[in-house]
Image (cartoon, rainbow, N blue to C red):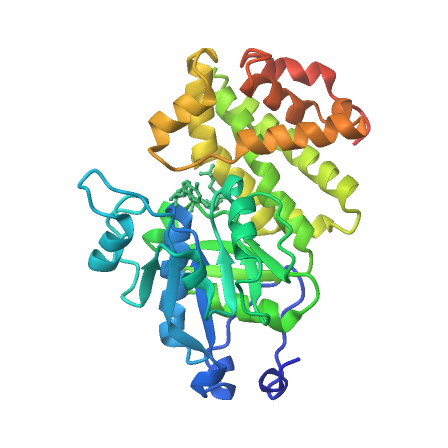
Length: 370
Ligand SMILES: NC(=O)c1ccc[n+]([C@@H]2O[C@H](COP(=O)([O-])OP(=O)(O)OC[C@H]3O[C@@H](n4cnc5c(N)ncnc54)[C@H](O)[C@@H]3O)[C@@H](O)[C@H]2O)c1
Ligand SMILES: O=P(O)(O)OC[C@H](O)CO
C-alpha cells in the first residue's frame, strides 16, 4: 500500500452502499506534483468522450491528479478534410462522436497511442471491444510499470495488469448533458485502488459505487447487450411491453446463470447494482443495440446487421452481435446451448439462420433448471 494512502483511513462502504467521494481525501495527503496520478483515456467515441469530460472535471478539482487528461484518438479525416484530433484540440469538442459538448480545456487529444500513455499511471480503456486486442498488443512494453487500469468496455478483457471495471446504466448522451445516473466499479482486491477510481469518476450527477466482484460487474455489462438485441427484435415485431419485459426477465436469468457457471465467485448482489438490472433496463429501452436490432427486425432480417449499423450509427459501434457470437461459441464448446435458449437464439437470428420472429418462439425451448 502506498504510504500516502496509509496516512488517512480510507473506508469504502460495504458492497451495495453508495460510495461518497470525500472532498479532500487524496488532496490533503498528496500535494507533491511528483506523486500526482496522471490519467489517459484510451478511446474517444461517444462514451470515451463523455468519460474524458467526467474525469477532466475531477482532475481539475482534485490536486491528487495532474490537471491534464490525455485522450487517445483513433485518427480519422473528417468530411471537411481536417483531422479529428486537430478539431478536438482546437474546439474542445469531439465533433464526430459527441457534438455540441465541451470536454474541458484540460483534455488533450493525441493520435499517437504510445505517446498518449507514456507518462500516465491511470489508464482508462474505452474503445469498442473489437479493437481492444490490437490496442493491447501495441501497448506491450509501452506502459509504466506502476500503471493501474480500468475498463469501460462492454466485453471481457484480460489486460495482464491489474484492471478494475466500470459499468452501469450509462447512456453516454444523457451523462454528457449531466443528467443523473449511477455506475458500478468492480474491483478485485485492492480497495484503495477502487477508491481512487471512484474519486476520478464521481460527480454530483454521476454516483459511483464500488463492489468487489470484477467478473460479475464485467459480465453484466457484456451480456446485457445480447438481451438488448432481443429487446430490439421484439420492438421491431411490435410485440408490446409485456413481451419485452418477459425478454428482459429471461435475459437477466441467463446473464446470471452464465456468469455463475463461468465464475462461481460472481455475487448475486451484483445483479442489483447499476451494472446489473439498471443497465439492462436502460439498454433495452434506449440503447444503440436495441435501436439497430429493431430496424433489422423491421426489415425482416433482409439487410445484414453490419449494413444497418453502418447506416444508423455513422461510425459508432454495437457490441451485442459480436458478444452473442462469442457467447454462442462458449455455449457450443461446453455443451450448454440448451441451457441458454435466449442467448443462442439471438445469435442465430443476427447471423440470418433464423427469422426475427424466432425470438418469441424460443420460449418453447426454455429449460426448467434455473
Ligand atoms: N455510447 C454509450 O452510451 C456507451 C455507454 C457505456 C458503455 N459503452 C461502451 O464503451 C465502449 C466504447 O464505446 P463508445 O461509445 O465510446 O464508442 P463509439 O461506438 O461511439 O465509437 C466508435 C469508436 O471506435 C473508434 N474506432 C474505429 N475504428 C477503430 C480501430 N480500427 N481501432 C480503434 N478504434 C477504432 C472510433 O474512432 C470511435 O472512437 C463500448 O464497449 C461500448 O459498449 C458505450
Ligand atoms: O447504446 P448501447 O446499446 O451500446 O448501450 C449503451 C450503454 O452500454 C448503456 O449503459
